[in-house]
Image: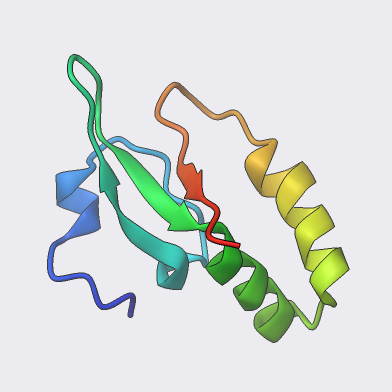
Length: 84
């Protein structure tokens, strides 16, 4: 559970949601004239990949760069926040 007090699925209906990474969701974004998109923490994604899949930090970061950040599914792709 990501601890958010609202329902991501209804608030960001139609936005691309990443399977198995709900714990990395930190919010929903909106912009004037645009659709809502789901906001993920990059660091939380890396941590999940390490814990869940047994990757090292560098393996998880490489996987993130290629398979998650590099994903283009629609104009409503997720947005990633870097807090390093």
